[in-house]
Image (cartoon, rainbow, N blue to C red; front, side, top):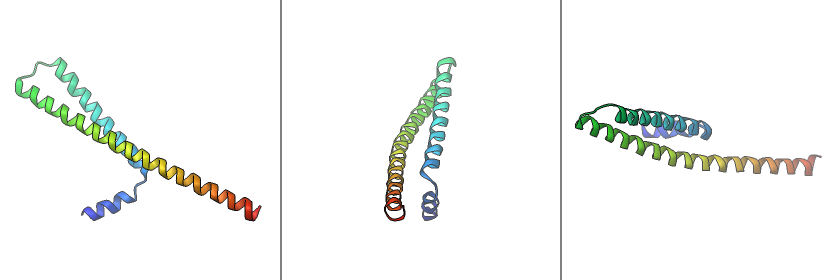
Length: 100
């Protein structure tokens, strides 16, 4: 199962993975804002308040994880872009040297 997952992940482009991760991060931020609003506005029992704080902690950790993942993915995207530009420059050089 893990092997098929990695094969499936390899077929996904870096840009679509960035978009997907940004959507997940945005969803977590929205959930965190709702939890913070609920914490401020509602009178909660001690158990509910602790559960809400735990949920907020988990959401903050997820947001940080997604930010790190985005940083790695953007670096990979930058490398791919540089490779594409280098290949384009080499292709243009060969074209103008041998064909033009």
